[in-house]
Image (cartoon, rainbow, N blue to C red; front, side, top):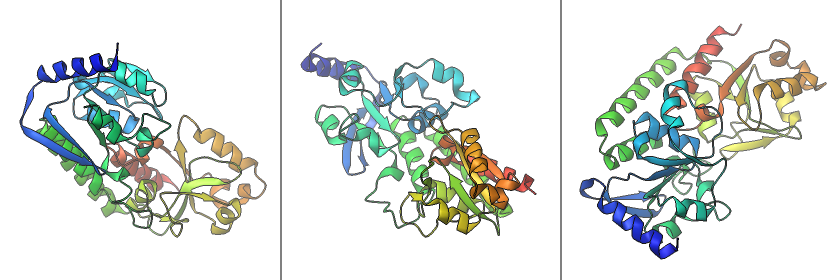
Length: 312
């Protein structure tokens, strides 16, 4: 099928979809997409975006997903299983075009990189709108300013309006607010320092000062040992970790680096194995998806808080 015919089919599909009460324009990190109808052929390019759609009950609007980081929660598994997986990682542009989408929705800016699907502006020029979660708008959230939960609620509000599921979005937002406030009130990590270990052996890939993983620890009262390091993520020298003597180690569970592998590494290292947190196994395991500013972020905060409360 040629690009011209693909665009024709896309135009016809839009005409057959439910119209919005008014044309809606959304500024997604500087790229403006205009919607005349509710998208019904959505491709999600990251797990975070996929879970936002599933949480809103919009699996029927999904025609494809890509790039999983860990497992989908059981409550969404059946809905997820009914959606086509078009790629294990980012799909080729030709693969995306062949699916005739009317929205590309991503959870990471890398999805619209030149080595992935290509810039948002290029898709919009083809008549295919795009949306990138607000937390990934780097010009609006610089690496020296701590991220808050506000972008998540903006995403829920925008998606609720775009898909005419405002009530569902509001219920989810209110629930997240209530649960985050409850953990903050308990403050289970107060007075404790923590090292977040995502991956790495030569250096430690950890949380910088200003991303969602740092916000996760802050939400339960933990003091991030790399709070003074600029950026959302940070590569730490192991000497810095050993010197900081973290009281708790937060381990990220992900497809590319399991918590078991990281525990094995820490216990085998002659220096790191002497850390009190390693000796006493003060480990807390959090799924990677629950460290992102998506609908599962509150679960990560609750799990971290509960596990901290259970630690001696």
